[in-house]
Length: 356
Image (cartoon, rainbow, N blue to C red; front, side, top):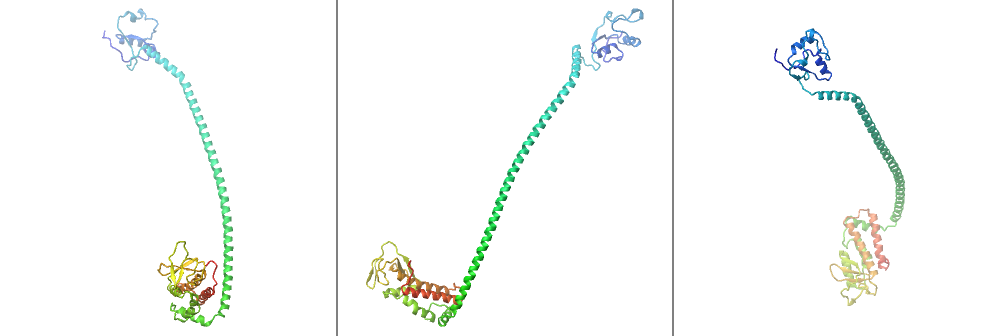
């Protein structure tokens, strides 16, 4: 008899009762030394596991009577497992097969529930955002309406202001035209009354303006207006004042409250602001004059101040003409010179403004 060997595969696994029993989860043990004989006998006639073979049929004695060693027949793949593990695995597979559909159904139900919840939350969030957007649109609509009303109000006020300005401008233009017409009328009337000799002298001086007193125009003004206007009682001081006016070095300023030095003019002491240094009369002197760079001051009365001021205004105007600062025709210049000569004549006669 050949030595026993451990089987790795069952040659007759499809018809072998041992394989069939292992497939059903029951572990069988087979002797390792009866492989060929067992295959021959199993190939001739099947037999049952619950009754031993009969001796008269030429079969081998029962396996229990043959003292051979036994080994566990493992799975066909060579992996050994205990009977308990096989039974547990089979039972777990059956339980898993039974619980699989229920678990899958529960999982699907949970997914559906979660999806529904997320859909509801998303819907609520979108509704809230839509509500906020609608509220913002309402506020913007109100703001647009307010700005539209403000714009309409501003446009209306601008139109009213424009109309008012145009009306005022037309009124001013109309008044200016009326004044111009009146001035032209007066000028025409005055041209007929102008002394041709005086105008001819002024026009000749205007062509070559000078401050020389020997020219006919200024010689007449000195003789008729400037000389009499600056002819004061105190002759010595009068000459000094006239020279300062011609040189444009005379200064007139309001009386200050400080004490001033005593000035003697022709043995007349001017000790206070109550005596005029030019006329020698007791008058309230609100102004004083200073000649050139001298530190001496002379109190003057309002009448003396008006006479000096009138002469200074005349010389200022003819200096402007000489410097080319007056850009007018000859006739308007002549009428302005005539007006200044009139002021000198009135001041010489004692007429002066009260604020002087």
